[in-house]
Amino acid sequence: MRAAALVLGLVLVSGCVSAPESEALPHVGFVVKRTGSSFAQEMTSGFHEGVGRVGGVSATVTGPPGQDGHREVGLFRDLSAAATSGIAVATSEPALMAPSIREALTRRVPVIGVDMRLTASSRVRLHIGNDNHELGENLADELIRRMPADATGTVVLGNTAPGLSGFDDRADGIRGRFAEKLPGVLVLGPFDTQRDDDANQDAWRRLVAANPDALAFMGTGDCDGVSLAALKTEKKSARWLAGGFGVDPRTLQAVRDGAMVATVSPEHYLNAAVAGWLLARRATSGAALPEGWIETPGLTVTSANLGRVLRRQESERARREFFQPQIDSFVEDPASWVRPLEQAR
Image (cartoon, rainbow, N blue to C red; front, top):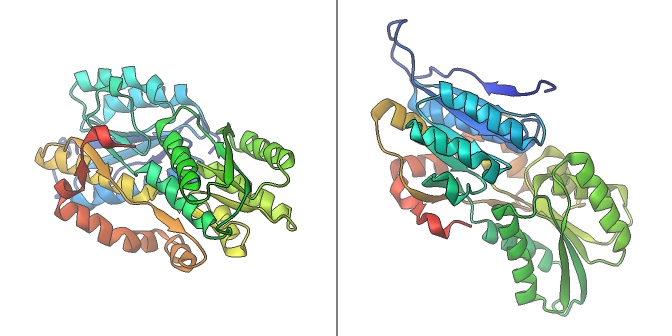
């Protein structure tokens, strides 16, 4: 994954009827952030699963291997010229991406926002993603359960992307839940823990060193979970609790080893599968995309359900079987999943 940009998916023809060679298949695409990350790989697999359910559509997934908003924009422009049947976008820089999205929309290329919300200025009317405020509350609940009802002290909160709405919403959910259930605990932060993996671990190393008596350390992003897992494993005598996001294998191993209390998965596979199915359906049947917020559920992973999650992560087939009931539920009644766009958080 050292190339400037990595195309993770090429052509899907499953279930399609043979056509004359001169007749090109409809083409849809997906621009993701940080293709080297586990969450991007989950998105890629899910998108292809969603498109493949419809069949007769080619699909391309692309994105920069590391954190590079400008490269995301360039790849979006290139892909929007080729994947004219529609594009899904999971960007790390919504404001930077907005002008290029507007330009694609003027050319009648449908665009769907996935994961973190796009800005209103992008004029995209469909967002697929979690209630991030609720995900933050869910993570806080798991750590609160392991603290005395009269606990006092501090919890250190990190945010990989301050100013990016979904991450901020997670942080707000965590802070609000502690204020509600453990008013004697002071949540410090959120501190900027950076998106780059190495910088993120350095930031957490400094925060842990500066707060030796903290009750817990919590982060809003996938790389926060990986960094905290590594630090807690390294500091075997540390008594502080740790919680983060994502299903990176290193994070799941930390939950298994007891180094992390919990991790919350945004279920990127499901989000992307929904986007892929909607774009493919439109490309083949002309069905209009819904407008609003398609709210997808996250999953809190603890020692209680870790075994099931580890089994699903073992293979593409296992993932497909795990998510099939949820995808089936959406396909059977998409409208029941849609909420007003203004409520997305």
